[in-house]
Amino acid sequence: MSEPTREPRHEQDWHRVHPVTPFVRGWAAVVAILVIGGQQVLDDVANAVRAVDSIRSLWWVVLLGLVVLVAIIFGYAALAWRMTAYAVDDDAVRLRKGILFRQQRHARLDRLQAIDVRQPLLARLFGLAELRLEVAGGSDSGVAIGFLKEADAQRLRADLLARAAGVKAARRTDASGAQPTGAHQAPGTSSAPAEPADAPPAGVGEGADRPLDDVVPEAPERQVYEVPATRLLLSLLRMPGVWIGVLVLVGVGVAVAVTRELSILFSALPAILGVGGYIFQRFAGEFGFRAALSPDGIRLRHGLLETRAQTIPPGRVQAVSLTQGPLWRGPDWWRVKVNVAGYGGGEGQQQGEQQHVLLPVGPREEALTALWLVLPDLEVENPDDTLALLDEALTGDARTDRWFVTSPRRARLLDPWSWRRNGYAVTGRALLARGGRFVRSLEVVPHERTQSLGIEQGPWQRRRGLASFTLHSTPGPISPAVHHLAEDEAARLLAEQSARARAARAHAGPERWMEAGR
Image 1 (cartoon, helix red, strand yellow):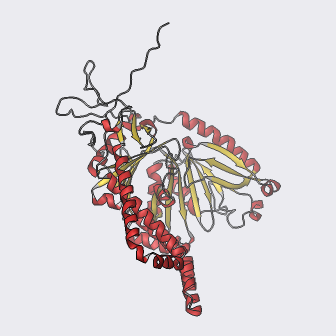
Image 2 (spheres, rainbow, N blue to C red):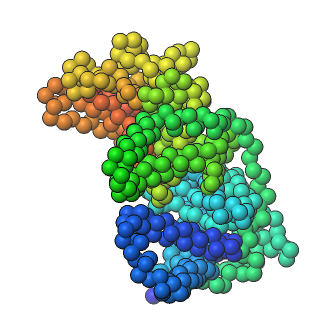
Image 3 (tube, rainbow, N blue to C red):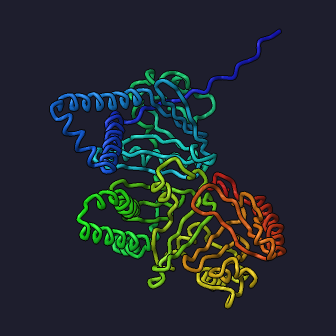
């Protein structure tokens, strides 16, 4: 009986991240501990003061404990850096890490959804950046490579986008004449052996902490729009939540002045800081927002303290929404968000929301421009009617509709404010779902990006012959739905949209979009 033949082991060139990474990550942990401790102190100031008085004579013990804690944090970060390495080839990016529990993750480039270059404040001081790869497959399927020198991170991002697009990357040979793994060689040539994929990070060769020397040039870009800081600030001041917070603050001030009890202020302080923190984080996260168009995708840059450069490959956006609050109607401002596969989570709530923003705030013209970045052509039957259709989608209702199918009159008891706005329209490229009276919304889903469809019907809807039509997208802020349609209309839409989605997926282009025209 012959032995089974073994598959040849895939070899990779493994590289370490920048040596300053432990310092950057360690200070992030220290700041997080200080923030948590500060919140605990604010929750119970009186007990915190008594605790300080009781240990005042043992200050050296507290200081020693803090030194030991900081040493443990930075020591762990240094050991984690030692055990971390990454490798790149034409098919995937691989990352291995872990001290007690080793793990190796890989992100397939044909499933790549977006690439971000993230720079926290401390990393910016050292000129470093983290590369985050988001791939289809869930909220925890991404790979983060960090930290690298900013120029190296940008070169690696350009290389990965080119590989994901199907462009074969060329590599310079090193001084010894060996060609790194992943280079495309002529038949019959060989390269220097690389380290096995399952070797420990400690065996990474000399110089492996430097990324590969790519010759893939960064694709040119054309800026499309930019959000001024004054407009962003004014848009935040027009949010109803800000005025509610101001009223609460005034009420607390009046209560403290009347009762002369500072405990009221301390009790309300966490809520006040929460509202203020949300507003500041949103302003800082969306500060300097710029969008540009390039062959490798839609490039978004934003951030005040922590900067982020996102690159969303074309055709990977699953759904688009345009929303307008009641206080934004005067200047006719809109906010545009998207669902991108792989952006379902993995970060804080505020950062996760900012990942999905395509335009924080802008006039209608810029909002439609953002929509064109994703869907350059809605394929309206008469192209001259495209703007009129979108105007109806954004601000129209059943009394003036030409293209939209809306809720019947019997839906007014279930939704007295928005029943005339609820509706849908279908073009050759996408389904448009409209709703909301006070907060207007328009959701656009390309036919080929439809994940699944459904009809929901509650007991009150059933009694009045109504049903809601839902489109299931990838995880994100957009949950497309058309509420309170007539039962037969919802069933007809379900059947027709299923056929449209199947036909669109059958004619969809390749995953590697730059190969589409070849």
